[in-house]
Image (cartoon, rainbow, N blue to C red; front, side, top):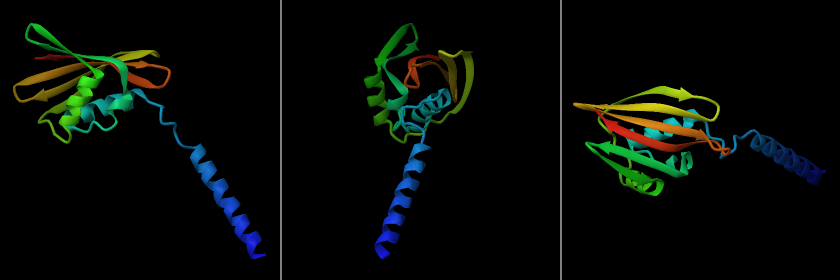
Length: 141
């Protein structure tokens, strides 16, 4: 009888954990909002832990500095941000959706510092495995 109770309890516990696991959101389910919020956390707060998952492998990062354009790959940008871990930028951040449809979105992320503003035009695309950043173009005003 004691064995039967133990076996019944074990089966009930296994069934419960299976149902709980079934309700989890898949790891590769990435939304537009998650991608933008992860980018903002990395750029303004130095929290780049999840950035790798929201940036597409072919993503390009371009920065217009004066008359020249600096270009970086995903690896170069994520390596740079890893070195800036937990560095809080002295800026206020705002976002505005410039374009939005079922396949892609362009969001302007303004980082307002004392004396200048860095505007980042972040393109995110529905890649089939979630929404990922495919391009960032930054300008300084």
